[in-house]
Amino acid sequence: MSEQDRKIFDRWTSAAHHWEKHREIIRQMFAPVSEALIEDAEIAPGDSVLDVATGPGEPALRIAELVGSSGEVVGIDSVAGMIDASRRAAEQLSLHNARFDVAGADTLPFPDDRFDAVVSRFGIMFFPSPVAGAREMLRVLKPGKKMAFAVWHFGDNNPFHYILAKIVDPVVPPAELPPDAPDAFRFAAPGRLRAVVAEAGVASPVERLFRFSIDVPLSPEDFWNLRLEISEKLRERLATLQPDRLDDLKRQSIAAFQHYSSANGLSFPAEVRLVSARK
Image 1 (cartoon, one colour):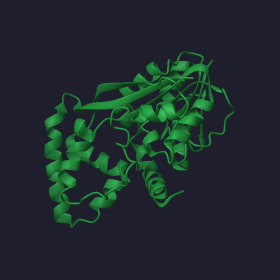
Image 2 (tube, helix red, strand yellow):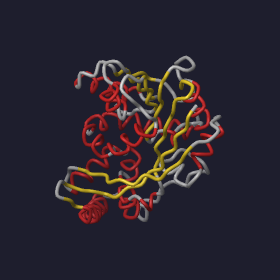
Image 3 (tube, helix red, strand yellow):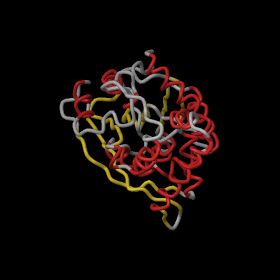
Image 4 (cartoon, one colour):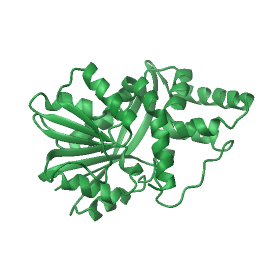
């Protein structure tokens, strides 16, 4: 594992308990993306589905509800804390058709042609080798079946991300990343992820831009707290500030979040790219 990959792994490990704490809110925020992946992967009742980089269990748990007792879902993640959280959530929801295991995307512990569908929501941009990960997902997919990925479109198209970036970056500049480094916006540009999937061995991958609303049932101040808790990278950067400077950034951020207030909390327009492919 490279130093950069190790840093990312350690950050996700540190954030795992916060993602579990906020699991239901995060589920609500990104539920439209889960439904879009289900649609693009053509998941149906009775299917066997693999969710790669499942985090604290989504969209695997939503898919488990859909496929029913005659189907099954396996969620994998390289972070053990995320898998522990997923298992606890499945038990709480009595979803006995969902199983979660620690595994990396580039060495999937499954035989060829194992699943009816394979999905990954906001995962492939952090894979050490996206092509190897996509190739492995293709290997375990049954012939004629589909896999589907969701990645962020440009940060400037997503106020969920850019509000904090525009306030924090001038004060605590982010580290410069080398080209193609693992990052939330690694595949924001049109065609980039489609090219990766094609290189993995798919003849005609399909890409579409998906617009939705990130609905957050929180006040602006509570949303600030959530963002800090689920982003170890952001916490590391803000920890370098003096208390009065941090308080100033917090006030600016909360004021900016208020522009997206809705009847039930906050609502941010959002854009992701969806890439799907049939084996």
